[in-house]
Image 1: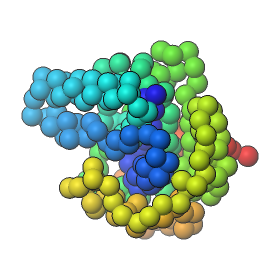
Image 2 (image 1 turned 180 degrees about the vertical axis):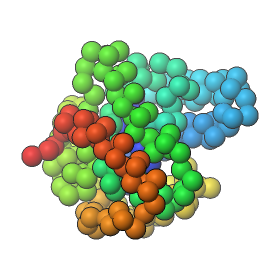
Image 3 (image 1 turned 90 degrees about the vertical axis):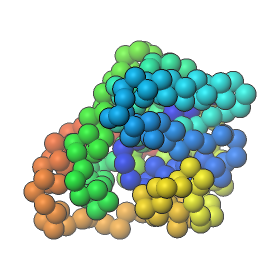
Length: 232
């Protein structure tokens, strides 16, 4: 099985990697396309070749054992060929932009709209749904934080897998594929479980650009949230 989780930035998706590690039944890859996405500005031809090699490796591994990929949607849309989507089970972890965009801004003050990830996630969701004729499994990150057991049970149930709820608790520490990106993974490294949101963020403390990004992305989040599993 090749299980893909297409995300938008920040720490919740990295905590998901730790849960998958704790399960023990998947080989876990955290953002395997990331460095090639960064290299794209240098040579599109080389980047295309590298993306294809990564896909070939992941697909091959999935014939030997179960493979889990967590990747940002904007790292693959427009870069990666269709094989990874057609050979894998495509799932989506969505976030409320009122929480994710301020968090992104804290790490990356000069973020672009592409960095926010919402347009790419929506584009990929619709592409997968059209190509496969099936509705992809969607997790709402905010619901996951509030009720991990219910959402994880619904997620793996939709995939025909054991939820293995013992994996909702893990040890502190990083993963080898986070080396060089520790700042982006600090919260996940210190986590031992999915933790509830601290509360509403005072958006007036943020620049107008942040609030404008939130306003633009909120309809995308609400649209995808209607497909989320495990919601009451």
